[in-house]
Length: 168
Image (cartoon, rainbow, N blue to C red):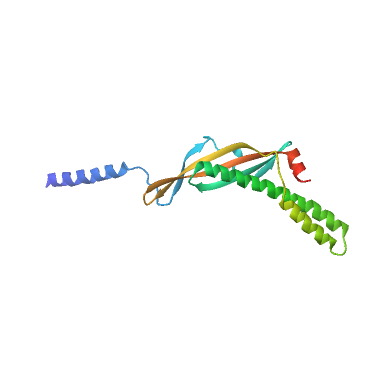
């Protein structure tokens, strides 16, 4: 009987020991960051736009993409889209306020607003450069094991002089 209890206790201890060796388990669909490139998260990661005396900065982001290089290109395109949107918005606001202030008659004011809207859709911007990039490699658990995805962040820099020129 004594041998029987020792054998059962040994079996229980063995099962517990083996189960503790498997380490922490990731739940299905759960994601975790397994690598950062560069290793330290930049301070601009959570800033969509900001500026200093000489430059405007715009962030482009794309998340959970399977191809890192493609993700970086998409993030840059998102950042460039933000630059264009900001310039379009500024043009519409500045000229819209000027037109309303003049109280143009005969529907001319609406025509001018339509022309401004059309012109602002065709804004050309030069001088944008990529200042930095940051990538997070994400591990996601799946039915078949794990897959790796990427979050890509790009910081674009636009000299204030080029920004002012694009608004003209």
